[in-house]
Image 1 (cartoon, helix red, strand yellow):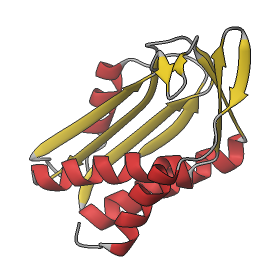
Image 2 (cartoon, helix red, strand yellow; image 1 turned 180 degrees about the horizontal axis):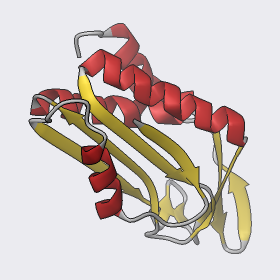
Image 3 (cartoon, helix red, strand yellow; image 1 turned 135 degrees about the vertical axis):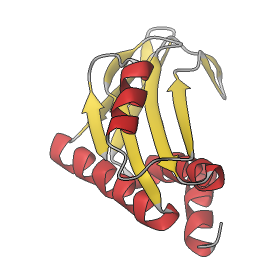
Length: 155
């Protein structure tokens, strides 16, 4: 299991290889997700973003989330990498990998991690439009997605 914050870009193949090498048992399915910085928000075009974090707290929360996913979905391994600092549009921002005996568990775990990440991991995002930065407020839809996992343990 690995969970880390990085101020540099990541290599998806290396992360996949690390995930497979760390499997506690032979996986039957592996699901990965890579999130990219969009070039727009609800108000129109953006010119990149910046992410800040509190290193000890953020890394601990990400490890805890990966451990929860391993336990809840019987994963053979999981990994999370999230970038911080200034990121240009279309840059890689987050990577999640889940390995399990069965594909459904790997898919569910990856969704669980992504749905929970925005509410359980302390990261602060500032989007830039026309040279001005604006802090992004928490969205109700993110809280709803995370809450759905708490309400439905069989999901």
